[in-house]
Each structure stands twice: as structure tokens, then as C-alpha cells.
Amino acid sequence: MTSTREPVFFISYAHRPRRRRRTEHELDPVEEFYATLSEHIYELVGLPVGAAAGFMDTDMDGGQRWSAELGYAIGHCQVLVPLLSPSYVTSRWCALEWQAFHRRPHHPMPGTHPTPGAVPVIPVHWIPVDLPSLPAEVRAVQFFKPANVPAQLAQSYEDEGLYGLLQTGEQGREAFNTVVWRLAQRIALAYGTHHVEAAEDVDFGEGTP
Image (tube, rainbow, N blue to C red; front, top):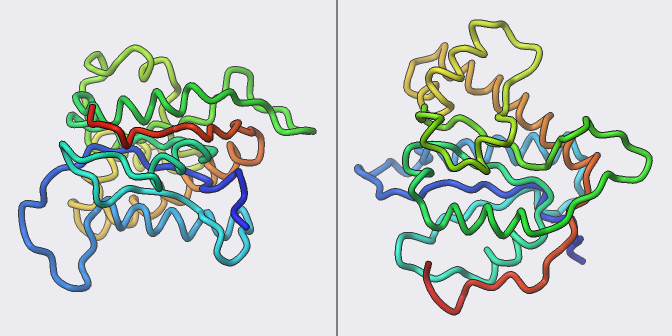
């Protein structure tokens, strides 16, 4: 039976056309990020077999309709993880996902004491973006910063974004893996300290934005 607290997280990102054909065993960078993050969440949260660690839409492109699966995920996920990039700023789809999640009330889990003002939205630097260009509601949320890592690694993440780290050789990939692990810990903390009420009526299937 599916829990009303699944999926744990929802990846919101700007879809873009693929510029080249990938090999059979080569993952799209966003898909690699999602797979790694999902594996960590399974371990950190202790999810049962078959539970949904996360959701990332891989099919929707500009002009397509929202699926029932996507509507369910944005209406039940507990943590929203926006991947910030220049394309995210102008994406109507991403704006709808953000709005749909923010309409859902959230409360502290019984017996927990979240940081005052903390919300279960964790924006991530995917590609460096001019911060003033972001909508005010996005800028108002604290962006993810990896804790307990060397200052140089944290700065590389902010300067390059997760996508950029994957493009900068073995050292960059090691930094990518470290940052994704710290992000998984942050998501697990948000999941354990907040409950976001389910929204059963999130349905964008009647049209396109």
C-alpha cells in the first residue's frame, strides 16, 4: 500500500532537448543525480522495499500535458528539490510545480523541533544562475549548502553547480558525490521533521501551461 508520504522527494527541473546520442550505459546527468540521490534516501530513511524514494519526470517536454503520475507525486511528496539553472528561471512547468507544492500546508512532525523558518524546499545549484533573475519566492528560500565539507569543495559547488562538477574530471566527480550525499542527509532531515499534507486534487491534465 502506498504511503501518503511518498515519494520522499520530488525533483523539479527544466527539461531540455538532448544534443547528442548517449551510449547504452551512459546516463543523462540529471538521471545520474536522481539515481544516486534515490539510493542514498533509501538507506538514510530506511524505506521498505517498493517504497518511492523520489520522483523525477523524464517524459514531459514543452507542450505536453501533465500526467496523473506527476500530479500524484507533486501532491504527496514531502520535500521539493528544485534544480536551479538559467532554464529553470523561465520554465512555466517548474513554476507550476513550485506553486502546487507550496499550496500544501506543512507542519512539524510530532516530537521534533525543526529550525525556525525551515521549509521542506531545498533549492540546489545545478548550473550557476544570476540570483537576481530568480523569482522572489525562490530567493526567499534558503539554498542548499553542503555541511561538514572543506570550504574549497563547497565553493566549487556554488561556482560550478552539480552539473558543472560532473564536467570537471575525476576531482569534480568526487565533489559531486560528496555534495549529493550531504543533500540526501538534508532531505532525510526535512522528511523526518516535517509533514506536508497530501493534496488529492492536483491535476494539470486538462491543458498545458
